[in-house]
Image 1 (cartoon, rainbow over the protein chains, first blue to last red):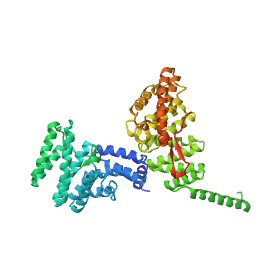
Image 2 (cartoon, each protein chain N blue to C red):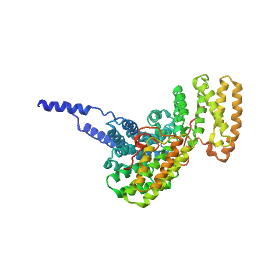
Image 3 (cartoon, chains in turn brown, purple):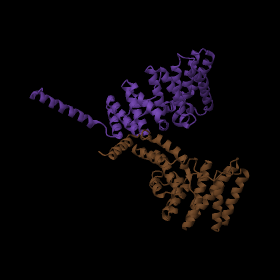
Image 4 (cartoon, chains in turn purple, brown):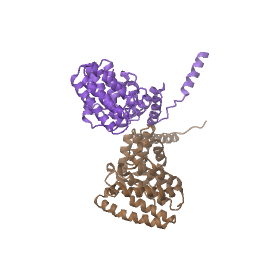
Length: 257
Length: 275
């Protein structure tokens, strides 16, 4: 037996003996580890999130809990613009047969990826269900979820305008302004600045409205934001993503371009 | 070389065949999936075959734990804890209890059995002679999920916590100056009194407060403060009347057992008590 073959066998044996550090972790323990890596932008985050997801599939975790595994992995790909990897995970988060989206922020991100990829019909389908979700569900009481809903409606307005869908534009713009008004009323009653990233987002939305020749709506946005800012000025924080109820990246909302 | 004669060969062949058949039958009867194990465990339970039911629950538990399915692991624990108790061997469930509380607590909290299982583990440890572990487990159960609705408003959480207060008060009668006895006589007594006060018009929100307070009053008497014991006992007796009139209308408010409809009309899983 030649030396090379012997060396090859030794390397093979050593590799086989190397223990997988994640092998003993239960799915939920793996998920905890993976979410930490995701938060730290660790290069092993994708592998860890995928491992947690695969372990959960093998464990036949029920659908409701399965969402906890699918969502961060979906978001990992969505935030990196990877539609082909994100898309198959979406139905594990929002059940297709459900009338509304339970996690609309994931739908927002999928619609944006579709629009970027030129899959306009798919984007419109998702956006229409998002608007339906917002119309059918009661107002959100949690402040950052109010911001998230408002931002998602603004995104739909921008994408539906680009797609020339007048009906979706009208419904989303109406919903967006109502949500902004609601946010303003809530924030007027106490010292509560806009969430990080919301003010610059609204400035970009206002510019979009002006470019569209919708100056009346743009003025409404400006006046409501001024009202909130007079009461509680926003901190000059770097622009972060707007999140739905949680600062983890699994809850981050993409912005329509 | 020693030769085996034909009759010896025959014996060997027959014995081997029997062993193959026996092992084969055993393999054939081993459940292949979690669902099958639980289904057969329920069937065995319903015909009163607790030994087999326990084995099948254990098998379901191992399958679920191996892949890390928390919900299934907890359901299997509930099953094997119940059957082991009915077999008179509750200690057989100890490793499974420890696994669930140590590894799947986040899953456990959403189960209606979350406090019952923790309570019963503590009681079983105590009864098995592991008294300090039992008391610690009961105290941990009393503190579990604090700050969340799982310990306050969801599914009779307060009422269930009072059952643990009673068990702890009974378990510490012979160590009335221990840290947990101090806690029962101080912090926990104040908590019960505050709850009674805040639920004057909603007795259902604080069911079993009377029983909890009465048990603590007796502990305080053992500690030597008969004045405070008398005051608390009087408050408990007054509260008991309100609880009794509510329970007369709706006995469900005081239920200490969960029905298990899939296991038959009389199958229940209850909060265990220390004498």
